Image 1 (cartoon, rainbow, N blue to C red):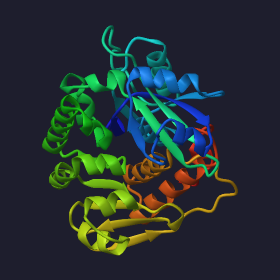
Image 2: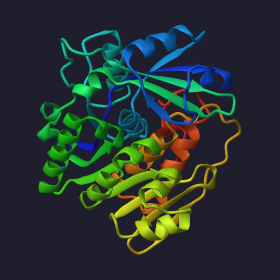
Image 3: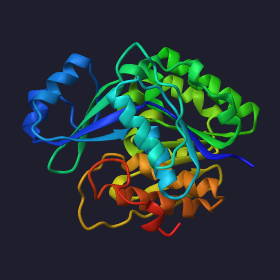
Length: 324
């Protein structure tokens, strides 16, 4: 019997969230709705120009496994932090929500990563990320025993930006495949797809479950609309999940396309983590052997819950809010 439902592998980041106007984004030359990589000096400059912030542990795959824990699942996480204030915050928060994270913090090297999340009045989020210690994540952090003791591993595409991390992902997937452990992967961001398109296409045969939003899917499959992307995607992986915001989501298998309606909400606050929590809900259902349509419903409900609050970690247990 597996000790873990899902083992997440990704960037260990502390989110610094703030509400800003459109002029702020223009002033700092930030592309609305996407993630931009910045250095530590830029992060410091942006931080000094913000009036009020909320700090919370984040990172795409970390948010996903946090969602799984909040639903009552048993997740673990692999990532790299430094032994500094942000590293302690990240470790404390992840373990506190029920995720097994015990990677030893680095004593030297770059500081723990942080992501500046700027939320405009339309609730869209724009991110500027200092990756710090994440850039030194390598094969030494790949825990073979944790992989073997998991039902499934979940990897974020953002890791592909670093050669050492890419090698670590390939090692983790090789171990998973050799031990009949399912593999899942999220494309993470349209610009991430743009940077690594061919490599992601080459990776598809190694992936059992692929997560993408509509823009990422269109870019990956060179499609002009969703229907075309879905047709091309069919058969590329065992399951491909494409989220479409207010239009819901689609679960694409070799034999069918299952459409899942979006959940209506009263007030949109912050879209940070919507895709991460959808993946968390879906994978929770999948590892509990729920039908795919039900996995999609749980994912949709988890995403709907998170966008009514500030930040990408559930403020109260999702298992108390969602009938899963």
